[in-house]
Amino acid sequence: MSQPEAWLGGPVEGISAALQPVAHSFVQVQRDLEQIVPLIEPQELWVSPGGAASLGFHLQHVAGATDRLLTYARGEQLQEAQMEWLRCEGTIRQGATPMDLLELVVQQLARAMTQLRNTPDSVLDEPRYVGRKRLPATVRGLLYHAGEHATRHTGQIITTARIVRALGGR
Image (cartoon, rainbow, N blue to C red; front, side, top):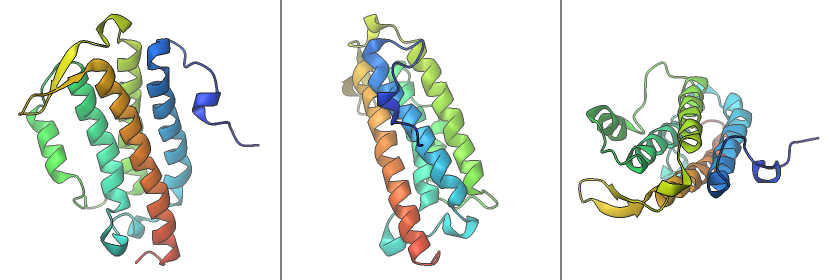
């Protein structure tokens, strides 16, 4: 029998009740990716069916966007290495396998869960600023968006993988 979705599995230990929806999102993302990514063939990683974003892009983007959103939630601005990662999302990384990209996502999700555990409720509504334009947000908003954003791209990975497979990896 398959596992229930993460949000039906009870609280994630060590994480505030206020951040449980975010934690459940990250747990579900990891579960879903650990099921689908091993089925992706290396030649399918960079296929863009109908001009849609490739599986490789989505995997890179889940890791990179989660990192960036959590950086802003800490009240920090992006470092040059993060900007470079953003510029290269979607770029074919020679020799990178689907499992290599999954490992990057899993590592980032582990850092995200640590950050959730270390985020006190007292800071959730503190203001934060995003990007060079310093667009207003809050810690809570950034964390929630990180969870929903990762979930959305994971859904795209699942769908795109099925389409690429149906097209024979073309």
